Each structure stands twice: as C-alpha cells, then as structure tokens.
Image 1 (cartoon, rainbow, N blue to C red):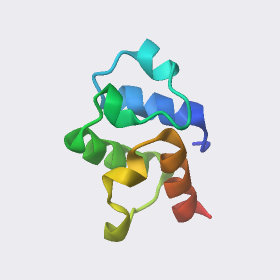
Image 2: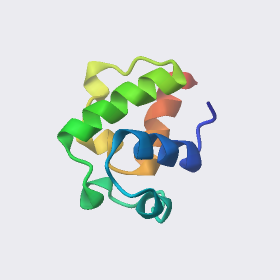
Image 3: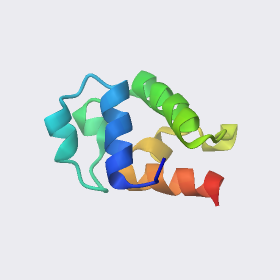
Image 4: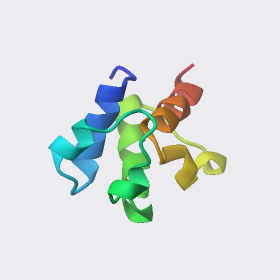
Length: 82
C-alpha cells in the first residue's frame, strides 16, 4: 500500500464509526481526536496500519500523539518502512 494522505483516510474509515465524508474533509494537520478518534480507536488504527504496511510498531512509538494527525501517522509509517 502506498503511504499517502488518501490511504490513511481509507484506513481511518475502516477502523472508525466516523462518516466517510467527514474523513475526506480532513487535512494532514487535522487533530483526529476532535472528530472522535479515541484511545480504543487509536489501538485499532495501529493494528490496521501494521497489517496494511507490513510493519511492527515498537512500544516506544505507541503514543496517541503519533496517531493524532494524518501527517503524524505518515511519519510514523515512514519510520518503519524506510
């Protein structure tokens, strides 16, 4: 899977109850917590990211801050794929 804003939005729509139209309006710096991404959804998101990008995110990087924006998620994935 390509690491892009759109691919992250697709994953967000798979792991959350948030309306897909609302997800599409997000920018790279939008705070995902303001649209309902909570700690449980963050865990589901990390698991889906690991599956989608064939990575294993280390315990040190399991922080809500690392999945609080699309740009933060992209940087996290790049850390494990480059």
